[in-house]
Length: 230
Ligand SMILES: [Zn+2]
Image 1 (cartoon, rainbow, N blue to C red):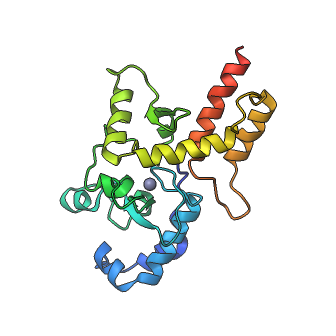
Image 2 (image 1 turned 90 degrees about the vertical axis):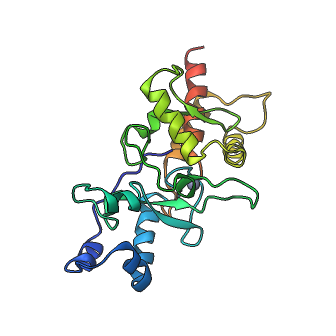
């Protein structure tokens, strides 16, 4: 998971919503497709074209707009000032299933689940501290204390969003292998690791980050720590 720095609500979106007191998510979807597409494009740029939950590469075609606090909850409870159209509650998620026989992940797996105490939300500044990644591409709780609240929150999020599926582990492992190289005889030097770390943090000229870059970054950091402490 990568921390999403939310931009302010786009001015055009604020102007579009102004005065439309009857606008809800259904009528927005039904009657304002151009605006909905434009909104999705804003979110894609905000997230550097990565799924807000798993970090897979997403585009206009293979993603959906996801409500962090689900619409069903916003409709049934009184969340101050948050409506299904509220910009801060939105992100772009992948379309879940990577293989026809595979599991749903991310927004589709999450469905209507929401528990503020057990859900690591990518809009929270500390979200990245909850997870660690192995060389095999597994995403695991960063805390090793299985009785800690941090472990429980991370483990529940992994379980509810299916972020540790075989397909996702394989995809992350592949990216980690690409970054580290497969020449086990000559491990990377501190300088090479630092250069890679810099590279995986920066979006390219089109504002895109590499898929699963945060997993690669955490692994690079653990490699660096090993060398620096050697
Ligand atoms: Zn995803």
